[in-house]
Length: 375
Image (tube, rainbow, N blue to C red; front, side, top):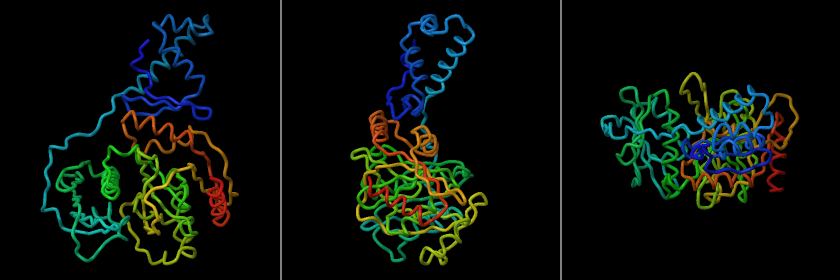
């Protein structure tokens, strides 16, 4: 009927079809039953032909309802994807360089200039363990400042992005992506995406841990890192196009106040980590540095949806691609490049997908360690 509305990429993963729409750069997860309806609608030359293809010909009300549902679905999946512009409307204000910090990552030194202590808290705490008090030759400069109620991010005096201050998390994400590009000698076009989740490695393979805020993802990663596994990436896990591996993100693990007492007796020097309070919503935080893995990237073999539940048994069970994608898609950045969309779907289909419910720290470490051995 209108093949221009059809998904550009589609793949059956488990019991669900994952569809990618280029126009909106969105992923949709549908049942096989709905996929059959969708295919029939798209190949029909008219509404009448589609209605005649439905098996309940006499129920006109149901026919119209289904037709409307399919059409509305396709319309929603084809809303144009827009990239924020306005990048020519602001120039670098060097008078905002009130605080300067240098960070040394192996053989690369990065300087970030901040306009205030408050703005510094958006970036600095997660990479403070790389802060270098001695002055070194700087390889790349960043400026982050607040002006006219907008946060600005510049790299080497070129504007990368600016957003209303309430959207500070967007600037955090753009900074991390630009930092990762520098550390791994890549450009944004080299990445399939940056996934909202934390990645742990045994230095052979890796597992991506995902979950809504407060479900125990960061706590679990801290426990696993303390038990000898390595943190590959916290919160933002970059997926590379060339090898489909997840790459190292130097950010420390962000730990919420509710977990302080749990980790204090288990993690050495945790009690001495500084407390960061950025806003009332997040409350007090601590950032836990971890030992860097030997390599910069590892293949991902599984995704685990983390669910901390008080006094529960440790339970690792299979979960659907629908549940996993609905958890990570909303807060992840995924490339609009059709090549990357195809790679993302093929990457997903080869992964083991689980949900992990836990409360006991000892048994959950053992469960994850055993899973690594089986990968």
